[in-house]
Length: 355
Image 1: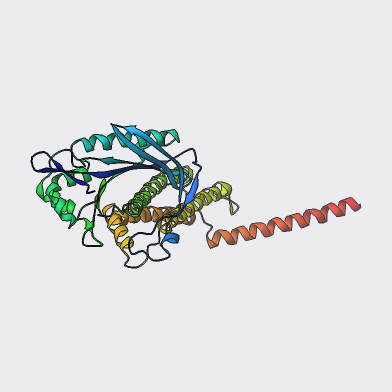
Image 2 (image 1 turned 90 degrees about the horizontal axis):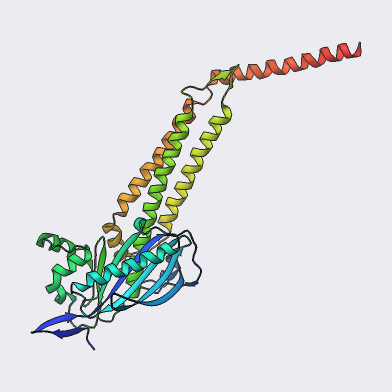
């Protein structure tokens, strides 16, 4: 049975599926079963091993806004949850779809809060999926204004240029399918309802975006801590007979900077290692389109600059408080004199003791 049904006086209502997910950090780690991702269109045999496995903690059904929805609580990383809700809509282009979307997001937010997460710091994304049609998916562009508004979570009527620009961010695999990606949502057109792998790839892209945001925020915190450590150090290193007075303090400061930078560098490389989509496969091109829309390159550049800042701070601290060759020579003479003094003391002590 087609998902396109007759409506009113020659009009049509388009049935479809709405998938809403929220990604956020959790204080309480979920428990569940680890499952392998399903291959996407034209994916190589090693696709399943190239992306993170997900842990499904819970699957449940609820009634929300007059619709039966299925909710999955899952995770790609122990402390980062993905709460996914899906519902079948009789008329996906109706104004009611916005209300259902908001209600589903609210349910996902509550579940995330139950795990100790903060929805306000999470990523929200909605996917509108249409199937059961014949012919080209462009036939649905008669609802182009609604499609663009849904993708941008915007209830106001958009300008035609904005609509055209939004619909231009798309990718096709076969003649009769289409995926349109935007910052807040995506539209999937597939006559066979083969949505699952595309939805998962979009979840992974949002998961990646969330990890960049978390790392960027953590780097800001670490830079503030480094600045605080740096501000407590004296302007010049003080010496007593060539010996540094606050040696332990400087050493601890340098160790803290090195540790913070190495931790951040490891986390940054780990984010980029999480997904290894290779070659010109459809999955890689779809992911690249999402990465471009989510401005991954800007996030990478920003994070790299902050990592370079920690390196610059380390160099400044180490150069300002390092021992010059002259001080090293003075320190050597001091140690030598101190050693001679000890030898002379023992010689005198033995001489008097024997007498």
